[in-house]
Picture 1 (cartoon, helix red, strand yellow):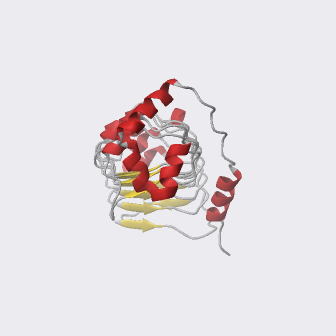
Picture 2 (cartoon, rainbow, N blue to C red; picture 1 turned 180 degrees about the vertical axis):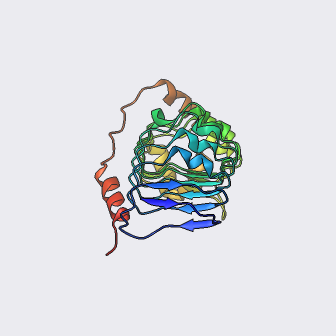
Picture 3 (cartoon, rainbow, N blue to C red; picture 1 turned 135 degrees about the horizontal axis):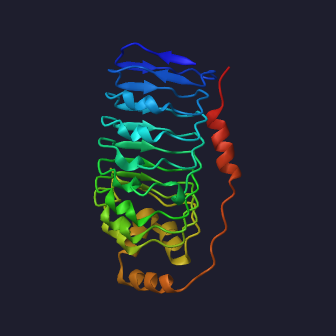
Length: 266
């Protein structure tokens, strides 16, 4: 157990293959805490006592749940709990007041894992949900009006909601490695093409006319196509026509990638 009972502005506890499995906190002025690459299985509820905490990094542990009190960290701007074992988020998780960057990559989350207020974090600028188990992205994502980066790569997504068009500040969208066949025309309202923008669409089982555009001109071709009246008509027909559901992707790749990234050095 690591017991932190001194005042510090920054605490960094990182070492490959650590044996740290628990920690207690009794600090007031700490602003940054890094506990990556350890064996933590839980976070103490009194984490909320770190009232000045701005950055909390818990990457690559064995955390299965987060305390509901974590959203009481009113000054927290960056929360990284990627590469853990989360399958559900606590009720009230969307109550953060200042959170700008949230990384939940490499967990076991899906659309049923999210509390009702998850998409009410209106300060959020970057949301990383890659390498989870999402099949659907809730339409409530439209509430994240300040979002600039949305990463959904390597899930099981079958559809992107039409409400995505409300994210007018979005500059990066990563949906590669899913089960997507079509895209909503509303995606064409976003500014995702250019030197400072990123749109990743590869490794999806697109319908032929989208795949042809992607093969010919990449993301630019796809965006031009989904803005066309021809595509809007096609999309409307697809919505009322139930086609075969693409099979789930082989998760061995996800597991091997996760194992590789979590390996400890000697």
